[in-house]
Image (cartoon, rainbow, N blue to C red):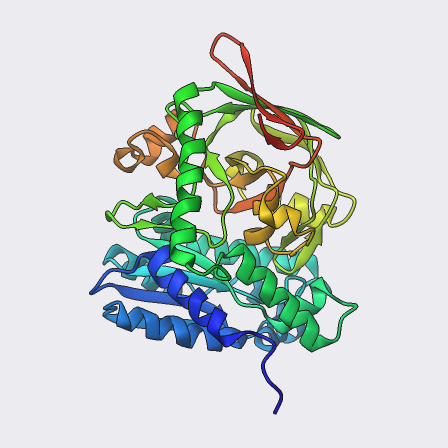
Length: 412
């Protein structure tokens, strides 16, 4: 038997970072983990670390690509409007009772690329609808939650098709460990330093109280109005349950809530979007008063339009995030085909649901109050990248004064 291409000592470190920095799991908390079955080596390590941290119960929910493909290959047509609502209701109930949530990604990002896009879209919409009670607990930041990654073999082969399988998986593992800061001598200290830097950026933006951001770049001339009483966040933040956690491992962004009715102009994506196993590339959309009025893509245009048609809020923005071109993920030169990584290589926007925590006193606001301030509501939240080395961003004050925020893809 050959040695694993994945360094087990760094997998141990990633498990510790996931539990202690990502989740900041508390003694007595339950933990729900979702992961591809291939990620069991990491799931097992995280489970050990969680119980050592005092977890009351760890419940893993595993997926398998062959089982997923079986549905799209052999399922009856009406089955694609079904979803496991009982499972998501149970997850929502667990979160309401204080459970933490960890998602491990690592599956083939193009798994469903050869499947019928209409069936993929229908299944995605059904799942999004059923998942909403659980998603709201996460998007409202009611619980401590986090996402991390495992270097799955199919994912590695997508990224490095020219390499032998073992080398491809090793290279992906090294990229994940570097981006997640677990290749440092003291990963926890490295994360504390990084979180402090992100806090400096978000604090400056909050002091400016910009009314809007103006993005200029190749194919992009977009003004994004910001929601009333919006608040910038980045890195570690306290959830409503009082636990400070890092929702994304890795992360390089500071982000806030756009005004759902004050986005105007055109924007072109700077990186492909991998969505539900399909690739959407060369996205070009036009916004008028917050809503997408024209949408096309060089590849996957039908999937993009299906996504936008999910519900009334799917054609409006729920997030805008700033990421410098000099971020380590960007400088790696790698396209991960995975939003967790690719969104941390470039400034991005997200269609759909906003985060209630991105408002002053957001935890105390009702959905109606959030909507009145310009926050968007939707079954989806899909990030796609619009930044790069040629991106300029100005912050616009209430009186229209332009303040440089980014020049040539870097903080001004």
